[in-house]
Amino acid sequence: MKKVIAIAALAISGFAAKAQVASTATQTVNLNLSNAIELTFTGSTTATGAAVNLAFNTVNDYANGVSSANQELKVRSNKKFGVTVKTNNANFSYTGTTTPAPVMPVAGVLDLRVPANATGGTIATPFSATAYADLGATAQNLLTNCNNGGNQTFSIQYNATPGFAYPAGTYTVDVVYTATQL
Image 1 (cartoon, rainbow, N blue to C red):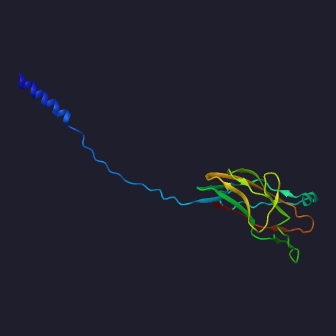
Image 2 (tube, rainbow, N blue to C red):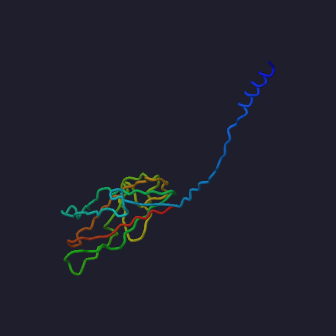
Image 3 (cartoon, helix red, strand yellow):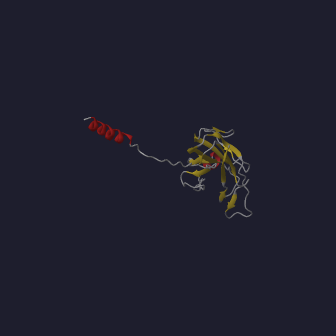
């Protein structure tokens, strides 16, 4: 009878002694991130916004100025950033029938304000959310110390007051916004 118990014990211990055999492999994954920044107009989802047309139809428009609708821009950046603004020329280009072509300066005529700022940054002086400030061909800080993120938006609004010194025609200038990582 002892032999039967020993065989049963041996069979049970042999079953418990079977261990699972495993093997592991390891692989390193590196994320090689570069600094990245993008500035676009939300209306066009590109770096080129739609043309802003300010129509001067009455003497009150000439005297008091005409304002645009809000224009929204979006910055996507993996680092804090700032935004500057300038015009591509100190004067408007003229298309019309007057010869010689009149020269209208941007400064003193075209102004900008920042009615909405969801960048986490600060609106730089002389710009503000409520008052317009002159634009010109020299870059000026518009927003400073903005937070990184994928949906940092702000809105701008233009106001033009040419007065009565210029003849009818189309006066054009490009406004250039530049977002730069800090």
